Amino acid sequence: MQPISIAMISDFFHPNVGGVENHIYMLSATLIQKGHKVIVITHSHAPDRVGVRWLLPSLKVYYLPFLPIASSATLPNFFTSLPYLRTILLREHIHLIHAHASLSSIGHEGILHSHLMGIRTVFTDHSLFGFEDAASILTNKLLVGTLKNVDAVICVSHTGRENTVLRGELFEPDPQNTSKLVVRQNVYVIPNALIADDFKPVRPKPSDIITIVVLSRLAYRKGIDLLVATAPRICAAFPNVRFLIGGDGPKLIDLLQMREKHLLQDRIELLGPVRHSDVVSVLHQGAIFMNTSLTESFGIAILEAACAGLYVVSTRVGGVPEILPKDMISFAEPEEDDVFRAISEAISIISAGTHDPQKAHERVKTFYDWKDVAARTEKVYDAVIKSPQIDLYERMRRTMHLGPFAGPIYTIILIVDCIFFLFLEWWMPREDIDYVRVHWNPTKLTQLAENAKRESASATP
Image (cartoon, rainbow, N blue to C red; front, side):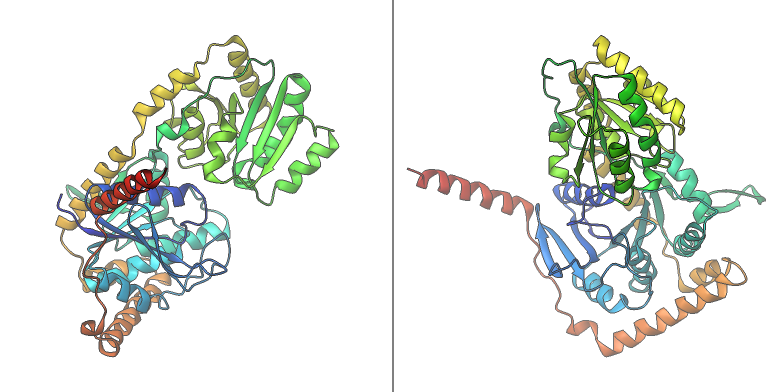
């Protein structure tokens, strides 16, 4: 496809570290290498990460002056971001915005505002959510309102697609039978990926000790209660096993109490927060990777561990069964006894020497690649650009279908947003905007870097 200008919009981006943050960065960098112009729009970070920053390779990041309220997510306000987004999207000549994560308020607002400027929209959902608790109900209703008018939806797994379709009510009448509903044609599945060369396995040192690595946010949905329950049993049953646990979160206190209660300070090491650049060094210390999540859309940590040569044990939840072949992972139901069984099975495999880390790395290397992800994402962009634009009347009609209460409320928000946009068109005319005329050329940037290296080498005595 022809090069276009793309804006990635999400509350979740660097300097925070996580699966969504890494996905946005790697996808942006790969699209830039394919000739597209990509910028990122996110919220500010204390104490001074606000304004414009640049990341390699020539990725411009706009940090808007909004502070997060919880878990790096900003408060949904619908209208406050419009002056900022209007100015940025127009001055950068953006053709398409790509919003990420259901809990990203600024992503929802970007989709709401972009149609006013004729900019096309794509949304990627990275997580699984329930349907019963109050937080899920409110989040799902917000998601339905947003996805009514989005041009395309991407999910990172087939299980995630089913979850998003149900939560976002992504149905339409069957053309052949109007009484029957079918899933909308603009819902796609594109998995995560990784740079396999960054996770090369190392030759293990001769030792009878088997190290189980856990890298996760220490929260309830990550199944830390299962880890707390099974770790003492595993240590008691296998004297040659130790745990290496990295991560931070509200469940850290439970792990500390468990370790103190069972006197396992010499068997269970808690690393605290681990930077993404240090993940591979932690993985190299282990032979088994343990994941006890209660819900998981994809699980990039599992993929990184398998690529580093570790044998994986995971709960059979969400999209995890889609990630690896059955001979590279042992599954368990999310209950204590079955997790203990799966870990025992993995310890037997490692003790017998039947798992080849190098072979596992080579296999994973052929499964996932960011160039393939970017190529598939380009096809979605191309389909969106060629599809007909949704006019204001159609957007209002779709919004009214949200229900007798939510429908009118969202329609009022949509109308007020249009009025506010017209006011901004008068108050801050487009001809007064300082448009970006020249963007960094990645090829030129690479040449300058290579010239600087040669000059530095020649100047060294």
